[in-house]
Amino acid sequence: MLDSYKGYRMLLVHAHPDDETINNGATMALYAALGAQVTLVTCTRGEEGEVLVEEHSHKAAVHDDLLGEHRVLELDAAMKALQVKDHRFLGEPHTKYRDSGMMGTEPNERADNFWKADFDLVTAQLVSVIDEVKPHILITYDEFGGYGHPDHIQAHRVAMAAAERSAWNIEKIYWNVMPRSVIQSGIDAMKAAGSDFMGVDSAEDLPFCKDDSLVSAHIDGNGYVNQKMDAMRAHATQIAVDGPFFALSNNLGLQVWGNEYYTLVKGEKAGTLDTQNRETDLFAGIKI
Image (tube, rainbow, N blue to C red; front, side, top):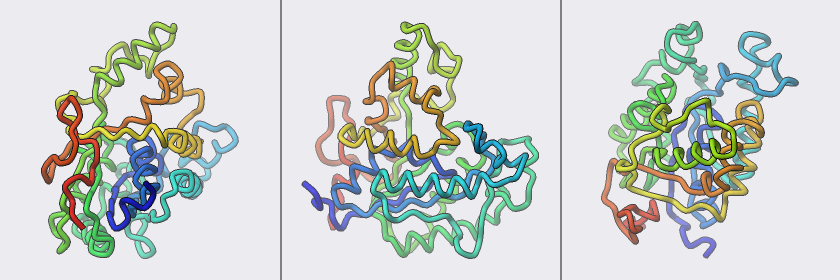
């Protein structure tokens, strides 16, 4: 029922444009459609990303360094697809944090990147957003940032510190998690079809895949998976339509992206649990 979640508020903290769609696109579209306020804070503009579209290759950081500006437009289009109206960059309009690149690279040494930003300042900027939005739920990465990218790790640290320092009590905090069994099913299906996923034979080899025991919530967003796929297409410089993410859905079906998983790290499980003792509604147990 539309507007049945009116008054409920969710805040997501992500490192780069496209992270939100891959991890939470169906969840965001679902709750936005149900009337909840969904707020996205993106920490950088993803300037150091690899450009997968030839016509935009000149925008890469090693050429004209225009990729960040372009990815802002991609994020705008993705949020339109998901019907999310409140999305911001951390620190705007006064501060801009650059994509930090991976550890040991030249971009990671730049003084203006997110990894090297003043932690207390960055945290205070997110506290300001929390105090304004007053979210019931916070969604971000685990302490490893999902796969070890410095910006993901920093986003996790800042989000958790801001939640602690804010005067507003966020009732439930979730970390994104991708269960190994889901990706392994996709790898097996692709192998059977004579293809592979990121060149690996086992989900154990992928750092972003976690043990299934870490999943405490499962959101069935299959009713909104087409919106998520449209949002993924909007991030065209980063997600190739003929690349591994779309290949995974071609072999496993769209439900691989319609189902999204979370680890509850603050608050208690509530509401209807599925057969694997996982929450099916992130807002369960919250009274407004």
